[in-house]
Amino acid sequence: MRLETMQTQSASARLWRDDTWQVVRMPPIPEFLGGPNGWMFWICALVLLGGLLWKPVRVAWKRLQQFFRLLDTWSGVEEVRDKSGAVIQEAAPGVLARLISVENSTSKISGIESGFAELETFTKRIHHEVTPNHGGSIKDAVKRIEERSNEMAYKLAETTDKLDEHIVIAKESDNAQAKLVEDVGKLKSKYAPET
Image 1 (cartoon, rainbow, N blue to C red):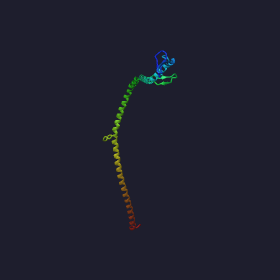
Image 2 (cartoon, rainbow, N blue to C red):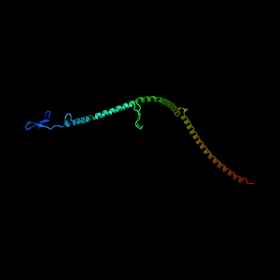
Image 3 (spheres, helix red, strand yellow):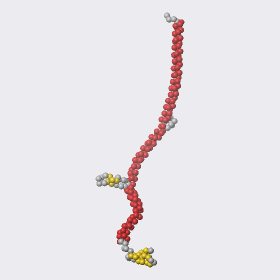
Image 4 (cartoon, helix red, strand yellow):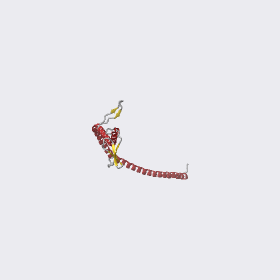
C-alpha cells in the first residue's frame, strides 16, 4: 500500500490498492495547527529559534557586559545612593583620574628617595664602624680591648700563681721561725737559767 499526497486545494491523497490508484479524502487540518496563519506553527518556530540562538545570545550578552565594565573602569563610576541615603555603590575614579593621582604622588616619592639617600649614608657609616680597617673602627677598638683584657687575665693568673708560691714560702718561713723560737727557748732555758 502506497500513499501519495496530491497538490490540490483540498486535502486528498491517492492510495494504491488492488493494483489501482484510488483517491481518498483526508480530514482538513485545523487552522491553529498547521495552516500558514496557525499560531501553533509560529510558537514552535519561535521556540526552535530561541533554542538554537540561546547560547550565542548568552555569550554575546556576557561580552557586552564585560565591555560596559571596561567603559566604567575607563571613565569611572559615580557614587550611587538609595532613597534613605545609604551608599549602594562606592565611587570609583577612572583611569585618567588614577594617572593624575599617580603623578601627584611622585612628588612624595622624591622625598622618599632623599630619605633613602640619607639612610644609605647612615648605613655606610655603620658599616665603616663595624668592619675592621686597621685601627679606626669600633670593631678594631673592641678587638684591642679584648686583647688587653686577655693579657691582663694572663698576667693576673701569673701574679696569682707567684703570690701562692710566696704564701707557701711565707708559711714555711713562719714555721721555720716558730721552730727557731722554740729552739732558742730550749737553749735559753738550758744555758741561761732564769734569775
